[in-house]
Length: 418
Image: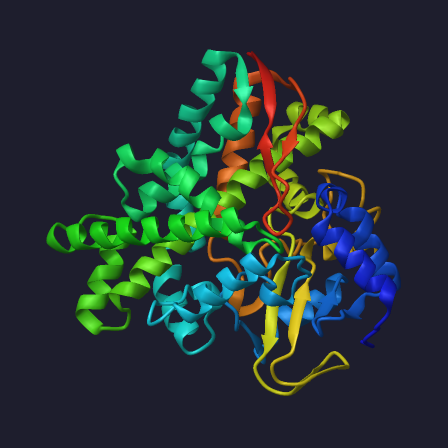
């Protein structure tokens, strides 16, 4: 790979990250970057990758890791911030203290240790054993949709992922709804240019979730149950391989990632089908295409559009010289539309069989909940086909205006029961 440094690349990044048009339709800027500057060093010194092969290579190289608590891409992303926002970010950075960082930002050996403990809950066998429960929770959402003849799919169907994670972790059912606004507010800080109000709301949300799960942890210590929280406490008490703050930060990560990714997978899928009614007809005529449909949704409009890595040592990877500390941003949304990997990549085609997209990354930081997210998506669309002859767009779809975690705020639909 050869690094390019040209002003047009910076212009494309600014349009992609900092304009309403770029965030609403990033594919235009992804294509320009991929065609003209596929390995691009921005004026900030960060390197942006937009080809599938380059992104996958970097994901799989263990000399690259995480070194930023500001989210995917972190401080490498283009920003147009006020002095107030800069001061607030500085204050947050200085006051992190001894708080336990999320597994999302850890490297081996701590990442390896935590992932080994938590991954037991997300093996294909374990997720398959949860399918009956996921189906039941899906039916609850579909009952609500049917009773109302439709509604906002993001509001109604978006309950599925938080309910699934809530049940897995051991959150009381009465508290499941409590987390949706907290997670939505919390993850706003992962975007390139959140406002001061969004940053403050994000901080408050994570503090509130930390307090909630610290209290739940204390309750589970006194009265263990058959849930993930109790299982992690048992590990902590028996072998001291995971601390209490690590238990709490891990549970928060599972809630945030599990809810946002799957909620956006469902919403983005409906949006893609509404734009491509022939593909919706194809799926409704042949429900065996559900699995390939989920893969195509993930590729076509990935719930996670980018990720970041930092060189942990001087390294040369695929011909790219990376001094220690180099920041690299992998544009997953661009890689998933790379014509060298996917034929006619801008077409939404549910019969594709060209290998997996990079929506869940790859390598040691491959998304732990990928199997679970796929299963939830499959159960939701299988349920929609089973319950409704038709599901139609019933108004304008409103995007949330976020790029890193891309999705809709509202997806109004009407349904015709079978």
